[in-house]
Length: 289
Figure 1 (tube, rainbow, N blue to C red):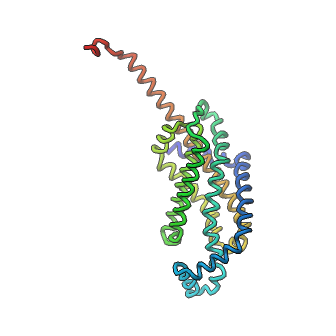
Figure 2 (cartoon, helix red, strand yellow):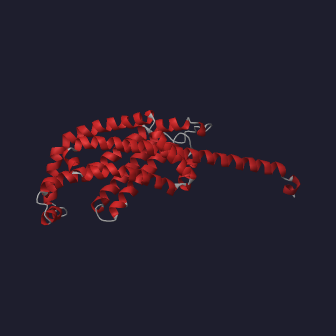
Figure 3 (spheres, one colour):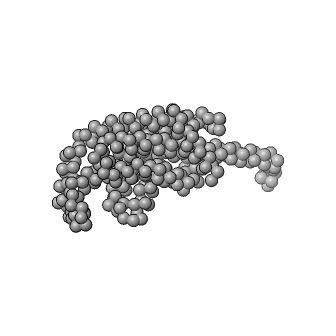
């Protein structure tokens, strides 16, 4: 627990460093421009398609009918934009997380590993860019599929408070843990650390996601967010980006410290074994007899 609190404090302080603020701004700017263009191109035709689907489909037509029945007579005007925003949020968030994992986490790790606390931590290159690419892509596709499959029940209590944090926390854990240890741990060390700290790392991912739930809640429920969606999305994306940088710092401090402790423990075990062999040398006669 002390290592968890220590790494959390270091991550909170480090997030406010000008270099980390710049690292959060760069992916936000690139992803914002990309999705700004995409949203500008698809918004009107996507709304028309979604309105048709919501009205004609037997699976969704009851939503509009139910809202009109309880007094929301203008439901047809805003239900399609609301659904489109809800569909876009996870896709945009996942794209930002994946982009940060590729472009920014290595820079965050390099910044952390230069600190005195991690002096002497060897860079072993236990992974490759290609391996990271396929691992990240596969993890993101699994998460996106789970999001789309479970999205209809996100509004059912208490699932709305359980499923999203677990899904985003799981994805954050996988991407951050793999990329943090990519250059400094062997595959065996990485697997051992992930196995030993699996639940702690998942908890860290869930906490980071719960912090990110604040802009998500405003983004998905505010009428202003629907009216000014392209502009509000830019602000929310920067907050997401900053939270992902905080997550990268938190995972970096925790896992690099755990890796250093693991190697120190293995080194001490090697010394103890050597000392035992020296103190109790083998008896050749006993072996031959």
